[in-house]
Length: 197
Length: 275
Image (cartoon, rainbow over the protein chains, first blue to last red):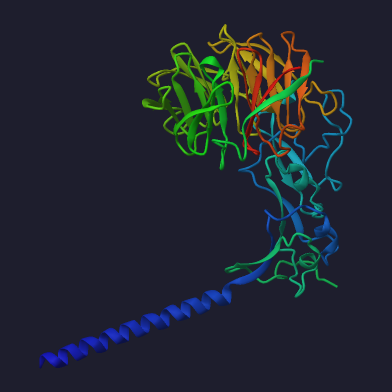
C-alpha cells in the first residue's frame, strides 16, 4: 500500500468524523430549540407593582403572583409587606392592619417561638397563590429602602394561558413584561390552568 | 427640641476628591480629620473640609476606623486591614471563622483591641492587633445575637468602654459592657412619634457624642436623631438633607459635638452643628 493512499484514507475518515459530528450537533441543537419555549415573565428591575397585572390578565384570578426570595428576605417581625405599618397599633405596639387585601401573605415563626417577646422571633413569609391576585401591594411595600426587596411579581407558568397578545404586556406602563426562552418548559394548559375567554 | 443646621459639605459631586462610585464609611481622627472610605480608597479631609491625602484600600471594603495613635483599620468580607496614618499597610487579620468569614460592617479601636461587627454572625467580635479573638458581644441575647433583618450591624463606644449597638429588628439601641453583659436598651417601633424608629429595621447607624448623647441614623425616613443622656429626643436632622433611598447614613460626632454624616446615595459628606 502506497503512502498516498494512506493519506487519502486518513482524510476520508477525518471528513466522515467531522461530518457526523456536525450532523449530530445540528440535531441536538434542533432538538433543544424544539423543546425550548418562549414565555412571558416580569422583569423585577423594571416592575413598579402598579396593580395592572391584577386587572389586565385575561384570567379571573391573574396568573401573576407575588413570590418571596428567601435569600433576600430579612424575616422581619415588623414586615412592611405583611402589616400596614401606618395602621393603628394594637396593645403590643404592633400595627394592626395588613397590606394584602386578599390575606394571601402568610407567616410562621422560624425555629422556637418566644411567646413572651415577639421581638425575639424571626418569621418566614410565604404567598398563598390560590388567594394572591397579583396586585403587588406587598411587592411595593417591600421595595428598598423600606424592605429588602425580597418580594417580586412573577408570571406562574402553570397558570398562564399564553395568549398571543398578553394583556399585561400591552398594559404594563414600564415595559416590565419580557419574553424569555425557557428550555424544556411544558406547554401551558398541561397543568389544568384556567382557560381564557 | 434643639435645632441643627448644615454647616458645610465636605465632599460631594463636582467637588475636589469627590466619590464617583461609592461612599461606604467615615471615621474621625486626630484634630477631627475626616477619614472616608469609597471608590476603593481611603480619603482624608481636614476638619475644615480641605482634602489632605488618599491611599488605595480594598475595593469591596465596607467600613473603617481610626485609632488615637493614627492607625487606620479597613474592614471587608472576612478581613481587617491595618494602615499607618499615611496609608502604609501594616498588616491585618482574618475575621470570623474558617467556615463563615465575618461580614464586617463596622469597626472600632479600643485600647489594644479592634472591635469588629460581624453582621453574618450577628455579634461584635473583639480582636487583639494580631487577630486573636478575645471575646464576643451580643451572643448572650435571647436569640443568640442581634436581630438584623437589614443584614447590617453598627456600633460605637463611649469613653468608658460601653458598646452601643444597633439592634435594628428590635428597633432599639442596646448597650453592652466589653465582657458581653447587656446594660440597657432604648427605642421602639413607631411611625408617628419622632422619637420612635420606623419601618422593618431601624436605626441603621449609631454614634456616641463626647457629651454622652447618642446619635442615630434611620432609613425609610432618612434622618438623623440626637438622644440626650436620659435618652429623650433632643433633635431631628433631615430628611430633607438626605437621599430618600438611603439604606445607611454613616455618622460620627467630632470633639466639638458637630455631627458628620455621609450619604452613600448622593456620595456626600456633610457637617451639622447646633444653631
